Length: 273
Length: 302
Image 1: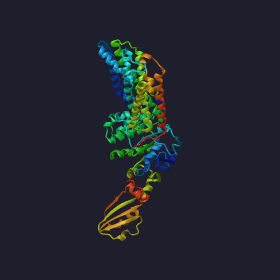
Image 2: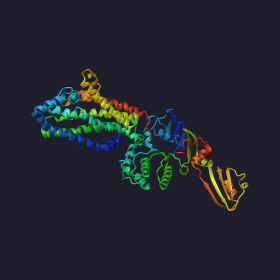
Image 3: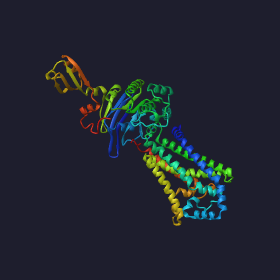
Image 4: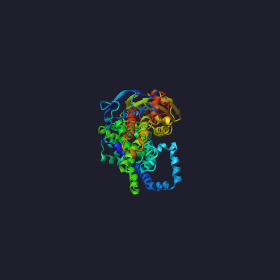
């Protein structure tokens, strides 16, 4: 097994991967860098502080805050609210969905898959190599991006342990991977990029809507439990440290949908037009 | 030994018939032409052999080995050029050939360089910067780079200029002499007759003829225009076997010859002939003549 397709996919996408890393690193660094001045400004102006607290108490912001309640004025709470709770999973979800949709659905639509799929490679190996490229690319972006947060932390002495930041990035990366897996599986099933992207984004926003509904309306708490957000980022992982469900629900879900997509892909015709 | 054998190979796309009960044999070391009009099922057959689509029923074997659904090892022996060739546009030709060869577990770099030189294509250029013809050349080179025993080519000369087409035919004949089997679809009779020994003709998903090119030619109808030095009478052509649709105008005769030209040539040679034009029929015309008018109802040959 030479993993030719796996290396090809990573080589083909390295510029996009680097761009994502730079973007998120910069965002993380700036967040950490501006944290002291933001905190000082809020604490020095009671009126502003009260208004801000009142705003965050609005149920709409609950998904950004998490189940453990308002925690904006600790470094962990601040980073969680500004990145790890919603923005990170959705931003990386976009990367994963676009990549996942292109890997099989896009290539089939562009007809470049025909020659690859008719080489001395089984369909399942082809799918597995592409899935492995998705896993590595998304997790690499997510984990490497934590360098930005760590650097910012170091500069302003935020006192958030690097291991916590890396763990949080892993949680976010796995969750994004789950969305990418849905898009890739959809591409494997339908052989088109457009529908695969649509299914990926549709799934992401449905998950976010369920999570938000569960957080906002008490009687719909159970609905929130149907969302990956609930398990992965429902609680501040920078504060809790390792909790199995934060990692393994997303990971298991990703593996499951990839298996389904891969099995269908091995048993269907490649599109010709 | 047969390089390709299909038995009852059938493919339906929903209610639409792709091919039906295809029984085909291609001898090892031969060049086999696969012909038919639009939608006849040529590409379907090729994609079934490459397993990019799965059969509704039937089976096929490659070099004597029955190929089960999901098998893939046999494809390392095959070089394939699909009908709708699409390569990674951001790769150079060389990178693509390297990538494709790695997928097929073998690469002969010197051979690739020789092929690139022969086809006059610069493999260091990105594929998106190549013309359609040069992309086709890269497609052909990637199919040959791992030195396959069997070439499966779906209209491989599409986009190649006539000079390169000739070079390609020469290459096929050289490969055949080295024992390589070639299975290719085409819509150009002259192309088929130059390189193929046998042809299979498809119509509406069914194999309607499997014969040698010589036999096909002998069935062909040629349009002949003869200009005599002086006017001739219709009796001149009476009793000549194979001559039909005679039209005479002064010293010019227009007619059709079905099969051998020999009796006609012998008869007219008794007269002074100023000009003799024989037009090779298109494959479509042959099919119309011998396989019925329903043949080309989708708009001609492909």
